[in-house]
Length: 291
Image 1: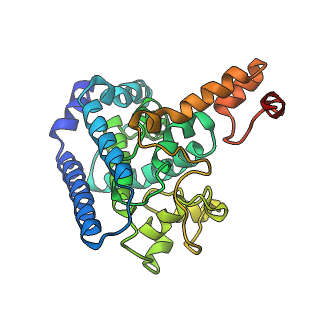
Image 2: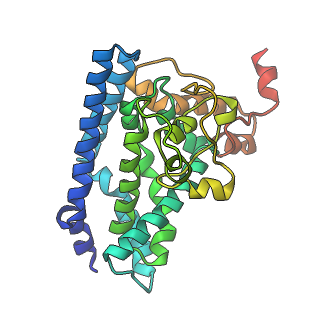
């Protein structure tokens, strides 16, 4: 496949209709849930909901720019050096979804473990509500680096279009699970990412931290020891909440915290660990500095 042809697939391939229809369905479901919550007077932080919707609009504006094609362009060199290419058929799309789901698990897990990645991903976890609009609460800059996790798929022989779309479909699948209106689903909770399973992932309770990273399947969590059933009432949000509905602060507050800690570091080694290390790591002298 030529580069021009691969690029044209984002406009001409039939699967893009599926992508578009899923997006519209997710927006429609979110609107329907808002109506239900209004009619039933369900408690909801409405300013938080508005912030989530404004972030959705921001994403749509960003997707109209060249920034949206960054991942595709960055993956092309790896595609060009790969000596074999997997054809796109119904079966290879299913395999691509499976491989992308495995990729998503590890990408998601690393985003919870390394501070510079968490700075982006924490946007999604920063709401103290749990409703479908939280599915829109995503960082604007994850596209700068998430393509890196697709490199192994390209080296396996998948083309950039198929790899990116497979990851997009996994993300779109997850929208419907951001709700409290659907309870536990029995055996489905053991196999798939469901509202109950994902509520756990959004919990700031100690027993729920760093659990249920899977995109569609819970297979990977069970394989790697991160699966957790919903038991105690979930407390949503962060262990250190940001307490703001300002969209810019929601999107960038963790980066400002990293910057503040970076400036307090006394050597290059500590600066690197502040940026790329674990979420809770701080130099011992930070406590002394605060006194």
